[in-house]
Length: 353
Image 1 (cartoon, rainbow, N blue to C red):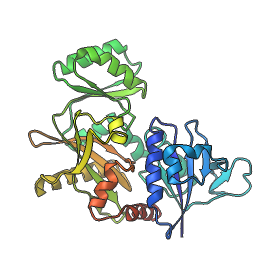
Image 2: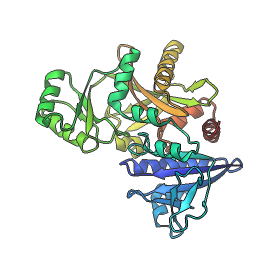
Image 3: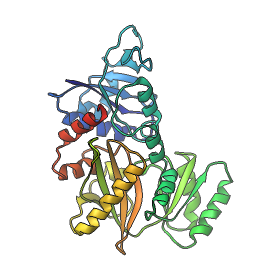
């Protein structure tokens, strides 16, 4: 039986999303195959070994359990595993594989992947370089440009390089009347800190909001079209499984954080069945191209726009997509005939090869 350690929570603004995803994953693990332990990382950064149920993790009640144990992951390769802070003589648990259900900063940016690498324990998801590059929208866009794939026209800025007023003026001059535009933190997910800007008067507030979340931002021209997504599952055999095409149907035309994880009334996700086989194949191939170019591993969700003119426009890649009940990734994989449980099993098998 494989020993699996699920890690959730974390320091990023996506802490709650991580808990929702982890609860869903835990409820679908095959306990005939895996011995499962869970570590929750509090918003303050404390690691707690917890026996919380999926329901407790989802609600946040896990933090109040009196039998939680403060622990740390050893980086001493001669003493691998999870240790208690109050008694580090022997490991409390030595996992065969780590499953980090962590989103955003410190979870998808290569930080915790570096810890896992140093600890010499296999883990699910991409390695350090891939994680760091994929979470940075500016770096990803430079790479995609080199691949020759279509994407929205954009600018990138860094806090402190020039006065914010000057950056806002550059944005206004560059995009002129091409509204709406979107101002995004370069290193945040789940639409956190993203603003839709409809005219020049809204640029300053949008830039200031983005800089609250990261010291670099990207500004993108709005694309008129459908928001579509492809789930990639890497079983480690050299072949990538690309799902059918998922589509986001949103009355507001902007898939915000609340709509991704809280509001299922205005926003719906579905399998796009009206695209031709050729169109589906091309979208899948572009998703695989981005996945391979970033040297990703295990899983990713690749997002595109399908424009009104029938063009495929790359949007972004998520190396640890959401696994909540509303999330597109598990829905798309299950639509391929792969159960949620088999999907997680395949990811673990790939990680420990």
